[in-house]
Amino acid sequence: MAFGRFRSASPDLKRALGATVFFGAASGIFLATLNNYLAEVHHLGAEARGWLEFPRELPGFFIMLVVGGLLTVMRETRMAAMAMVLTAVGAFGLGFLAPSTVPLVVFILIWSMGDHIIFAVEGPIGLRLARGGQEGKRLGQFGGARNLGTIVGVGTVFWLAQVVGDRFDLFYALAACSALAAGMFYLRLTVGQAEPRSRRLVFKKKYGIFYAISALFGVRKQIFLAFGVWVLVENHGVPVATIALLYFIAATIGVIVRPLLGDVIDWLGERVVLSVDELLLLGVCLTYAFASDLLAAPWDLYALYGAYIFDSVLFALRVARTTYLKKIVDDPSEITPTISMGITIDHAVAMTLPILSGWIWVTYGFRWVFLLAGAIAVVGFFVCLQIRIPTERGGGRLKDEG
Figure 1 (cartoon, rainbow, N blue to C red):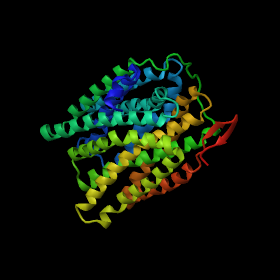
Figure 2: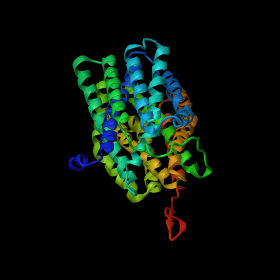
Figure 3: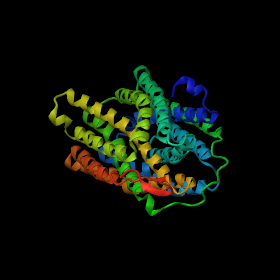
Figure 4: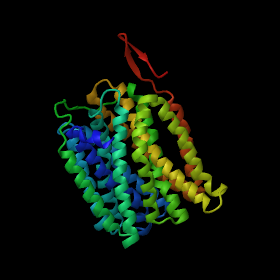
């Protein structure tokens, strides 16, 4: 979004973008440091790292019930503010109150609950601030804002790591402050206050493709968040400063690319975009699996860096799921409950996968983890080809994608 247009934007849009920037900073700090924190402070191995994904993603499994209950007493903007408070508590606890495994798990659970609540409500908030037919563009702008925050967050981590070393207490204190700032912006939002609240959970057969795509995305997310960085940290000894630099590069690219990808979604449609995303993901999986076999050092590491950055940029295409849902939903009030149901379904499938992946890593080697992810990407490609979007033409409903 150009600066001139930002100045003329509505107050709610400015506040929502401000919240997204600060949340992006908090999230960037957390993701850029988590694997090094677990390896250096708590000395976890690959199998234990996989097991940790179960409690970390457990809130996502229950998010349907959590969001469904909260929707009866508050709107999405208040839920977003509450999520940021949970995120701040989790980050502060990791930095100062987690000397052993039990508090580590507790504070990761708290962080994760805030993280999953915001994932359920940020899309509906963005859709309410979008003009008709430009939903992808608006959500792409929010993605760019998040990446801008990530640049600030991981840039700060990179600089501090050079100056004071791996001070995880300081990193997570900054993440907590950023999350609280995001919460203040969310509290000031007024969008959607005049709309009726949804008071029920939503599970419909017509949303089946959305649920399937959500589940496949959850599998992809778990493998790469848990083990994409772990390849770099465990197999190549990459330090936290370099991981932060990779996040910085990916976020910088995302500031420009994410809004453009939003336009691409509006232009080409969700079926094309999500299908191509799965094919590109397959290429990333094969790079992770075979770069060290096919390339000599240090070129194999450079290829892994490139795969990691490219995959981080591809994550921007997840907004296509939200725009797809907007186009097929029976009633706008069903969007947030349906997104929550999708998150629950993807976690029901994906929560145990990192445990299996950690076992596969230890038993057969790391490349088989990414070959499994590649096979799932192939399945996802064929699922995405089933996307159909109904449109109104001359009083009848036609399928405009297929």
